[in-house]
Image (tube, rainbow, N blue to C red; front, side, top):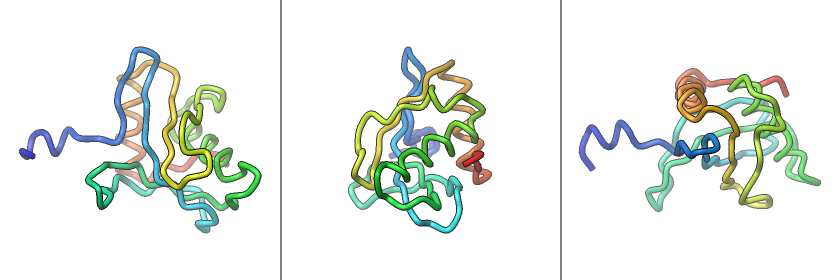
Length: 117
């Protein structure tokens, strides 16, 4: 992969409805935060996030939704878990203006965005 395409590669994609993002979630992580971008062993990119909530009864998933919504300045209702409900790797859909959400994700990944969980 060239330097240009490597720099442009992100774990999210702008869609007509907003942004789809792949997240690696660590429940019971001690704090609610976005920790940046990570490359998995299979080469996939993920947005790393951790939440204080335990992975039981969907509590960690709800905390992730609130974390992303708070970090991106959108309502929790605009963050939908579309895949990975019981897995560490999750796919979420963020509703709203795609380029603005992508820029907010970039900022959160670089600065360690924190929501209002």
